[in-house]
Image (cartoon, rainbow, N blue to C red; front, top):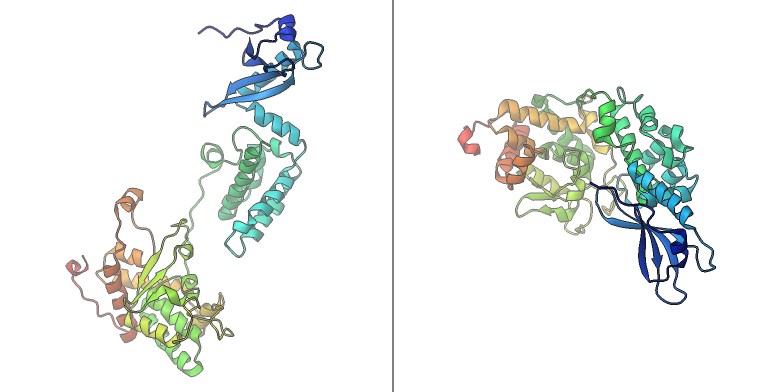
Amino acid sequence: MAKRQLHKLSSRAAETIAVPGRHSDGGGLYLAVETGTHGRRQWVFLYRARGTGRRREIGFGAAKGSGRDGLSLVQARLKAAEARKALAEGKDPIVERRAKAAGDTTFGEFADALLHSIKSGFKGKNTHADWKRDLEVRCKPIRAKRISEVTTADVLAIIAPMWPTKNRTARETRSRIERVLSAAKAKGLRSGENPAMWRGNLKELLPKAKKTKRHHAAAPYKSMPMIVRALQERHQFADTPVNCAAEFIILTAVRTSEARLMRVREIDFAEKLWTIPAERMKTEDDPEGSDFEVPLCDRAVSILRSVISKNTPSDAYVFAGQWSKDHLKPLGHNAVLHALKAVYPAITTHGCRSSFRDWAGDETQFERDIAEMALAHKVGDETELAYRRGNALKKRRRLLEAWGRYLAKGSNIVTLPRRATM
């Protein structure tokens, strides 16, 4: 393929051409002449953006000619050569110009400004503090460095020491650095690949992290009926909704946050059904979240009727905080945990879910998938999930009703043959 011809224009032609239009000097450099007696004469450089192939244009300034000051042909060619060099290195000339104009913007300055602009979108109570700690403390080695000059080596020096022992912290810090650098690129302060990018970059430089399973303290499922009876006795003695909440969580096998933030409008007493909104169902397994229906056994329904009065507003919390007589504030984060530990010290609220799962696996003939779905866990790979539209509500209802009977009587009465769970 023949090379494009360069230096098509002569110096005299560049200073005297008056015909409107764009006159090529080759290699992407053009002299743009506008219409009219006093039409502007500008040097422009045309190129295609790498990756997208989209046509872009960068102006070099006014062209010299007819007694006007401006860039000469030689000066324009030097600028064009710099732009072609940047393109050959995988850089975008426009982005490079913006980065140069930004001057000495540091990673710390830009990170702080970005955090201030995005914090209103944070939902977690501690999310802002976590971001602030990572960007100020863990990223201290690069805070004073120009954001355009941060490299993969810089990011690796921060992440690598934490990777073997504090893997989750390292992953979160890496993700936040990547977000900052991506935003800087969008602002034109950087060009090229993101040095904090995982795939094809840091993934190839860091060892595979060892997966460690964190087990929540759980009571043997054979002790669960005793724990439920103890909670019922304490409630009769002290009339505290927190004990009802603890029992309700055991009966439904839900996460504590899902129950303590439950509102009256989420309950359908006629269908004996509780629908948890998508925003409270966001987990590592399901970061997008989706509404989740929880079938309620008779005992769970009776608990709800006992704590919800006829005049309770639909947007009120079902399990109100100790001093919230109007149900406008939910139970405290650790209230249920303290109630459980008062009757069984070696237990956690999440451990109640483990007890339910062990019971379902050891003592019943319900399918594994049904037990997992009762815990709101995703079942199957992406292909299977794409084809599976149902939520097995009827099967989950039978499972939770059996769990309720087990907790009430202290003995497993589930003897259903496998065909009955289909």
